[in-house]
Length: 105
Image 1 (spheres, rainbow, N blue to C red):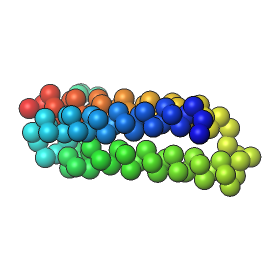
Image 2: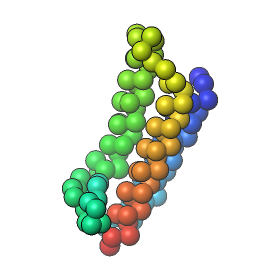
Image 3: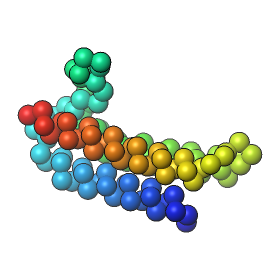
Image 4: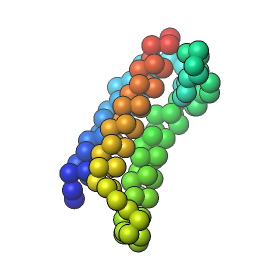
């Protein structure tokens, strides 16, 4: 287990913690997932999917990186740094989406 896996595990813990803390504070059953240039939401997702789908997405990307590193290592460069950057961006964007959803009461 490398340093990237520790960062990934911490990011998953942050996402789960944010779901447990901010989830009950979101009144709507739909959460804005993307915003246009004018600042208005362009599409919504069900609250449960917006919250718990991120964990499935992160695990899928991590599995894909592991599979590529194992079965096609000649095509994989900088996997550790990629995992770290992906983990931080995914957790940060998830926190952003949930805090915007909580604030839009």
